[in-house]
Length: 638
Image (cartoon, rainbow, N blue to C red; front, side, top):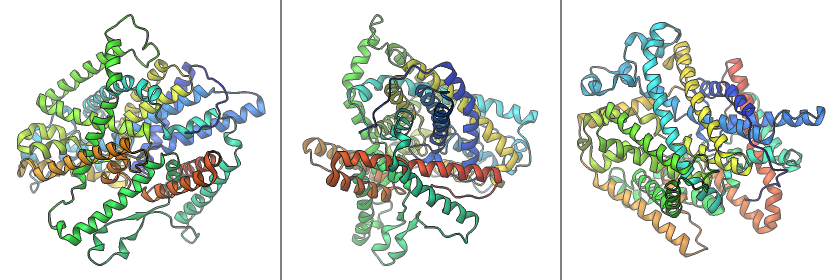
């Protein structure tokens, strides 16, 4: 990755920057939650969060403006990047796929239990009382609105679940920090992974020539004009605009076997074309290539009649095997460094790890303590030791794989392989029993999609600290503080909004299907227990084996164009919305490199930064307008 030269070496972030970040965080959490839950935005489903980039853009513009006009610089680069990272951490916790989904799951059974679904007799007696609120009087206002959180009975009922889930998530976050500390030196310093996602915020803050680039403003202006027209068209349908999103081509494939192609969306998201430009060529090629191959395989299986086998060709299971295999590959590639970290941890006088976010000894102790907490938490939730260990082992294996993928390639990772579902597939529901299944179904909210996963965002923050010469320990404390404020703020905003507007009344983005999916799946397993599903297990093995084959070919032949990560992303449906932008960015980058070489690529970089920035800035302004005016507005995504 070629970067614009850095102007200077920056000092350690000071307490003022952390305090400023903590002040901004509640506003950011409120904005994210209300925009997504009430107005239907899905800005946190992307690898680069929209609103933190927009706020950073505003701060940099204000800072540079004051510097030019009054010779006054409010913030150093370290201050700005510290604030940005804190906003990213808070956003990842309040996001779609994290705490927003928690509020769709934990109270769902008590509102929607009926004589027909028999949930009350099936699993109510297994639900830990501190997981949720069960009183119908308390839940009426929650779902119907026109009430308030600030009643004594409401606050008392929600206090215990709030303490439970905030404490639980705090431990998960701390465990992720410990893992990232152990992985940091290997992935950042030894392997020097690319970290494409953070290139825009880093260049925006560190490059003195960033905003003077003509190509940047050309890209910005093109996208801004499109977004302004699209926003006006949403408010006033007579305003012309170009329809560049979610065009489904399956309508043109009406005959067998071609109609097996299914939903195939073509979209031209400018921000994703920009992000895709910074992906390695082999990955961007692999993403759209394997997507096309996945669609063609559906057509072929229909032609051969194999679609009569329910679930064939089991892409979901292939995805599960691929992601577990990627986690194993990431750990294998890091094995020597992990052994090194263990040796250093056993030498209390060593100073080799003095510049890490925390000492290796502290990180290992933290891993042990957090793991013991999860075992106790599982025990109190009536889970067996085996179920607790298996569930969280799968969860953190996928977390490591996702973090490695983001650090190396920056690709989106909306995968849907849940640890519980994988456990039931391999061992059967009867093996785990009703108590384990019930407790783990209440975990569905934080492992449903992985898109805003905190761990890769934490790890990218460590790379930002490395580039900006910010002390890792100070950055760690900033992230921990941001995590605490983000969790508390997200809990408050969600509950305040639900009681005021009603989860099924005016909160139009409330994800009722998330809670319904978790509880229906649970009741299905309890009413009709299943045994290990050998076909699915076999295709998990196929996914893992094919990933290994692709890795071997990549290592053996330098010209091999297919990356195993592209396969895992394609079969996990992570790039269904983005395959077309990836194709455009891959084609653009290929043409530029072959015709103009590296210098041409360097000249083109600001243009693609402009595509991202223009989309994010104008999209954020439209969202602010929609919230203030309380009207439906244009969203740059979905």
